[in-house]
Image (cartoon, one colour):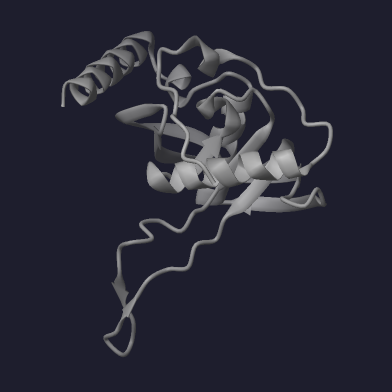
Length: 185
């Protein structure tokens, strides 16, 4: 597995529309493995292939936050949450509930920027898993928010595109400043 560079705004590749994957192959699985390693290293909870410059309809996700952060259990021992990666090839939303949920979103391609976005709280999705098997399921809560956020990437849409022009412009400038500071350090 290889950790790949994550593209950041205003890189025009992030605005490209990704293409469907004809079939899940060893090459597709290698891409998903690299994406997962890259996402964990960042660290993040979701990553679309376009964010590493690959315009394919592929997403990885793991909603177990802070794998290095320990939490106490009933015995007072420290327990580390187990990773729970999910893989999505050619995901599509089949149905969405009317109820919207606000959630403060962030993005690995827009580091240090967070803002509240409203999305449907529950969506029915269809996708191919890591082995190419079709899955149809309902996603709810943070799972629903994250899959919609990542699927937006596949259409060339960033979460800041839902913000006002002023907020979007400030977000891009903040990222550019952040990226420059990393280059200097």
